[in-house]
Image (cartoon, rainbow, N blue to C red; front, top):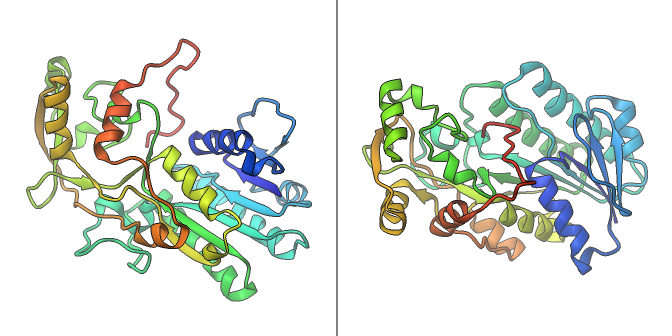
Length: 326
């Protein structure tokens, strides 16, 4: 297997490469990575190609002899780059894939922003057949366009592909900082959108954690996935006939409940919460299809996700880097 990976230097890519390179089941797998702004450490089974996937020549050179593609490269709210990477880049990848004599499977890692995650209300759990209802912004639009483009290549060219749609991906101490009222907050919501700067400063000084409340007045429920669980789902789908031309939601079995989290942190760590009213909607990204078809099961639930984040101790050579805010 010669696996082409885009986004290999990111949060998910680094874990994926480490997992493949250390697992005897994938001992014969070679990896080729398209790297744009960052580099990978040298490894006998890893080849790096410098360039952008928005460049057709770069993509065609990278696709030479490739059997499998995992496409993760993405950008956030940057209209120029989002269209270059998510539309033009994916188009060149798919064009090279469909015309290749060696290509066997194309895997896209999507995001739940294509269904609006907590910004859009759903009356039932969000499944793979739920309508795509992205929130405003170019990033959410780009993830919808990726999913639709892949589906059109199934229809037009009958390629073997799949899409794994993930919610907010957590690793190491991410969730601890997602609960911070300080300047080190990771992700959202931006506190200035829901509370005053004075309140934020006071809560930070008091060491509070947020108990987010949804639009219905109940503790917010939101889907997450730990990076290691996502990687295991990717490996479960890789070269799996059950994944052919399928879309899978990859999330924890149940959404994280901020009320449960607040109670657990007070009980286990003595951290007091503060109620934060938000306009967001509680949603449930249903992972039943992936569990059934791929025989995959996430190892993390809400409590283990929180405990892992608060217990994580960074080494001196492991500084916290946030490439994207969420």
